[in-house]
Length: 125
Image (cartoon, rainbow, N blue to C red; front, top):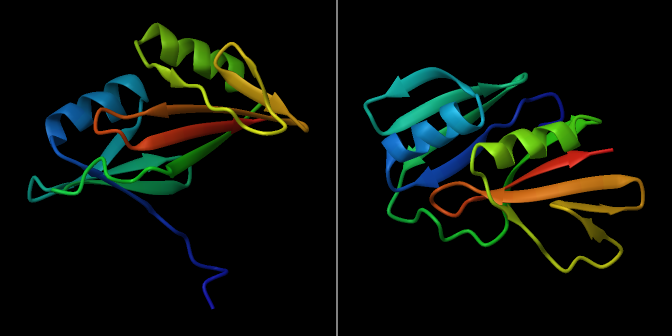
């Protein structure tokens, strides 16, 4: 039914200006739309990310968005860290922590949060 349809990530935030500084300044995403000052749409690869104002921002305790970055995970983590992004470290069965990257079974994963606590991650190889 939906296998040929694109999906969009939706990230709730309290402060759109703070979120804009993070998603554009830190992550380098390009804004493609701003709807009534309540929703900013970003382009990321061939997908879209909706960042919207909500009183429920920061309540999700699970990963909200993932970027598949292939063999570029190390330089991306290094670049984000140099901009002030703090990476999360989790006790993940089967994965060993190497710096800020969890490694194991042919996969590399790094988690970080936006200013509202949305959990974001990078997946590489």
